[in-house]
Length: 253
Image 1 (cartoon, one colour):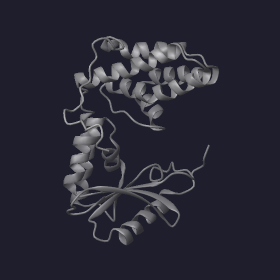
Image 2 (image 1 turned 45 degrees about the vertical axis):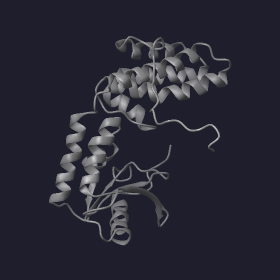
Image 3 (image 1 turned 30 degrees about the vertical axis):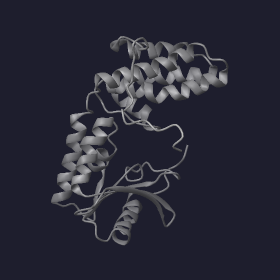
């Protein structure tokens, strides 16, 4: 396990200097992430949400500041509102709202900072946008395909590959079906635990058996139970239409 290597105070000093030196025209910024929470490790980066009065477009960038990895999400208030409500909430992964709600405003709090914090909290309180019927069908089909593959893998290596492909989408669907926000990567087990301790334990046990012992029975049962409330996997009569403009002359390339 990595040990905490940077204090919150040092991280905030870095963030303040980055704001001053790299974004001198910005109104404010929010410093966020594991380092700001006091949980940073030797591989953690510093997250910054940088707010300008007006931009032609939002962007994100990654860079090193005196050796510290930094992920900056650069917005004006309107682009930030769009990303929070129309992207993060719709996708069910509340990255920016969480940074606003839990981050530290720099160089100091202000009326705008308080308004943006409130927006972040409102997005979090609203929960993710419900999945459409089409989205549920797409996920039922995808998870069902992986489930079928897991029932009859050709080798242990193939079983591991299927399990790797299955873990994230299955957890995401289980969380979204409960009407709560999801997560990606290392945050998935944390989100599962915060939402449903028993579900978290079941995921952990099932996938540990799959990866450690090449035993798939518990994962198969888990997939079946997650899909049960939506009538199980979908295959027959599933159809996904491509956009009409997706065509090209055969010899055009």
